[in-house]
Image (cartoon, rainbow, N blue to C red; front, top):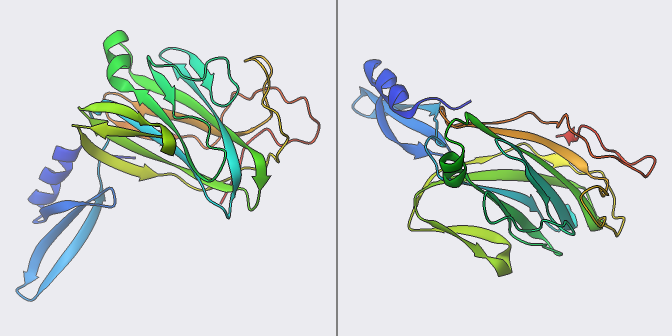
Amino acid sequence: MFYNLSTTIQTQASLGWNFEKVENCKLKFFKDVIKTRKEKRYVESNTFKNVDYLVFRYNFNIENGKDLDTRTELISPVARGPIGFSRNINYDSQYLRWGGDNTNYGVECILIDLKKIKEDFPSATEVVFKCGAWWYSQRTDGNMNMNAEGYKGGVMTLDGPNYNFINQGGVLQGTYSFQTVNIQVPPLGSAGTNDANFQPYNDIGLFTYNIERGELSWNGVSNISPPSTIPGIFNGPPNLL
């Protein structure tokens, strides 16, 4: 949970704590106890308030597996996707974009254009999207994790060779890394041919961004599961490490 930035600083100031800087997505405070020593305090901060863009990365390395394929679907306030390898809608330039198919190690990336969503759906109170993944080429320990970045202003551009989105001219408001997930679905060498023919994959869960409060939450398991046509393929809650 993230809290209001200015209110948090004011509250801590009333208790004698001085704001120093943001460190590892937390507000860092200090107060002079004696002249030769400082006490330090860390308070969770609302680093995603009023951001225009959210960038989510699926991270995996050689110890985890090779060629992690991803599925991302915008649920609310408008339905878009799913996007990812071999979907009919691979790139949706309006609200949800995918950075491309990384067949090696590293990241796959999605961009959520919150600015555009807020312009087109001014009464929306939250943005909800669903994430999932499976291994296409090789599963080693199967672990991966997701991290988020929030940007205010600027322009987002696709860094194609690195399957990434970068911000030019804006400000990075905050970052957050989510808990490790173990993707159990093994390499099957297929990805379906249309949106009704799902490749079985692990649900990573539903992510919700509260527009007014700037809170970003993850339920850890999606309540929307694609159909699995292969017996024994794990298609429910992921193993959380």
